[in-house]
Amino acid sequence: MKIAVLIKQTFDTEAKIVVKEGKVDPSGVNVIINPYDEFAIEEALRIKEKVGGEVVVFSAGSDKVTESLRKALAMGADRAVRVELDGVAVDEGVVAEALAKALGEGNFDLVLTGWLAIDDRSAQVGVRVAEILNLSQINMVTQLELADGKLTGSREIEGGMEVVEVPLPALITAQRGLNEPRYPSMKGIMQAKKKELKVVNASDLNISAQPKVEVKDVFLPKAKEAGKIYKDDMAAAVSALVKALREEAKVI
Amino acid sequence: MNFQLNEEQVMFVDMVRKFCQKEIAPIAGKSDSEHLFPSETLKKLAELGLMGVSIPEEYGGSGGDYFTYILLIEELAKVCASTAVIVSVHTGLGCMSILHFGTEEQKQKYLAPLAAGEKLGAYALTEPNAGSDAASLQLSAVDKGDHFVLNGSKIWITNASQADVFITFVRSEAGSKGAQGVTCLIVERDTPGLTISKPVEKMGLNASHTCELFFDHVVVPKENVLGEVGQGFKVAMQLLDGGRIAIGAQGLGIAEGAFEYAAGYIKERQQFGKSIAANQGIQWMVADMATEIDAAKLLVYRAASLKTEGQPHGKEASMAKRYATDTAMRVTTDCVQLLGGYGYSKEYPVERYMRDAKITQIYEGTNQIQRLVIARHLLR
Ligand SMILES: Cc1cc2nc3c(=O)[nH]c(=O)nc-3n(C[C@H](O)[C@H](O)[C@H](O)COP(=O)(O)OP(=O)(O)OC[C@H]3O[C@@H](n4cnc5c(N)ncnc54)[C@H](O)[C@@H]3O)c2cc1C
Image: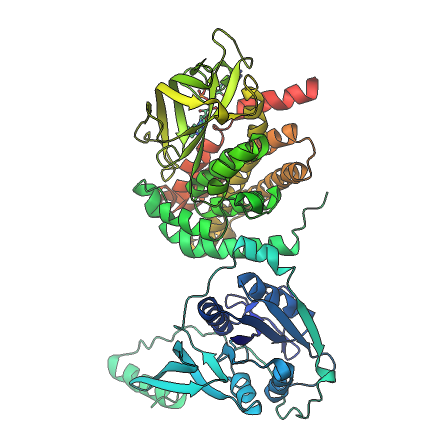
């Protein structure tokens, strides 16, 4: 079984985000593998441990993402590919095409990735890659089974579960609950450096997509204001409160 | 000297920290109050290759260097000092003694399962009448040709409640005195005649069990001599040099763990209409603690890096142990102070850190003995 995992490097969920000139300031912020992508790595490793094969991790980004690819290698992936985006204007569509082209001739039976990256939260790359490569797909999977060359994925839907079966090759996006990602072992960490990490330049991939989305601004949510207490006599307080709910909070 | 961690060490510390936060921190308080030996944690540590970090892969370890092992002890001690000492006695004394002094056969038979974490190691030097003056040990081993017969006792043996293998120091030459005539033996737990007491009730470090050992005509084959007959005291001292760096790292971790908790607390706690951290008197305490912790860290890392590079490190190990563990005691005492009555309460973790810090000034050579060692290096 040849399995590819697409991962993105994101800010640590506990990082204090600072916005500078319309961009999140990356200096001094801890980075991690997007948690949903970690579920994808874990699932890939479990499938490989069961049926054998190879797990290859892909990430698009600068040299900085090497750290995350190494961590995936330390967890047990066999090799890694970094798609260098230097000089290419990107949005989710472009990144998806770059990854799809990099996956290209790999003959992967299965592609796994997280359903969402916790930074931009656009939930697009996985599904776009599946479309570009014409793969069957199941999204937001919380349970995955492989039998007789078919994948059965369970996903939560309004009020229940949906069980979907797809033939291989397929792309699966992982949702929380799929598994509990392992810690990289000490030996895994020691071996990670010896494993292959290939760099592919996006500019060599003949990407046809142009960015269609432009980020106009990035800003932090307004600081929470202190609560307001209405302390006039009861009748006046109630009517002031109702007025505020209608006109300020706009909830009624 | 450069203590910048390399790429692997950064990843290693990151992994260990996550593990500690998720798997150890939530149970550390309960393990202490109920005196629970953390068997489950040790199993998980073994799966990750953390029971034999600094042991080569060919002997069941993970093939890391000594410095990486010290980073592990520091991180463990930040959340649970008991777990840190269990691992350090097991790896630093149990495994490393066989690695450095064992024959190939001993390494295959004893080191491999120890380093893989399938078995647990202990180190038995101290006796009721031989503490700081370890060379006065009396546990008698009578030479019977192809084996020794042991009679006597050991006290304060960490891991003894669970250990499978005891690195045991005996007097193999009747009537000899001091370092002369001491031999180091590998003793298996289930050897007939060896009994192990219930864990001793202690002030702290409760999840780590420390027991007495009684030897009544215990037969140990000669092939279990570690190093050479009569050369055991050298083994003991060489191991303790390394062991002291690990205890320094344990003290460092305890100080860091308590400090981190207290630093968070004083920003939240309000008195006189402001956080207690807004008082200059408190800020000076914080500044002093942080400075001492950094100094301790530099001493510990220097000793660890000398040992990793195979350089002489006896004096530096003693300096690191002495300073880092005294720092642990001062810092944890101040952390209890910073939390006031809550600091003294078992509802908050800092009193555990303070109780645990105390032992680091005592074992693997008291801090008075460390000063003797340092002075001996300086004045020879
Ligand atoms: C929880 C715990 C775990 C332990 N684990 C182990 C273990 O796994 N294996 C093992 O072999 N041992 C272990 N020990 C033993 C430990 O190393 C000894 O307790 C320690 O070396 C001190 O010996 P002692 O208790 O006999 O004190 P003593 O030697 O009686 O010392 C009492 C006091 O006198 C001071 N003193 C002694 N001689 C001098 C001197 N020449 N100059 C100045 N001051 C001096 C000491 O510093 C100390 O303050 C452990 C002890 C404890 C409490």
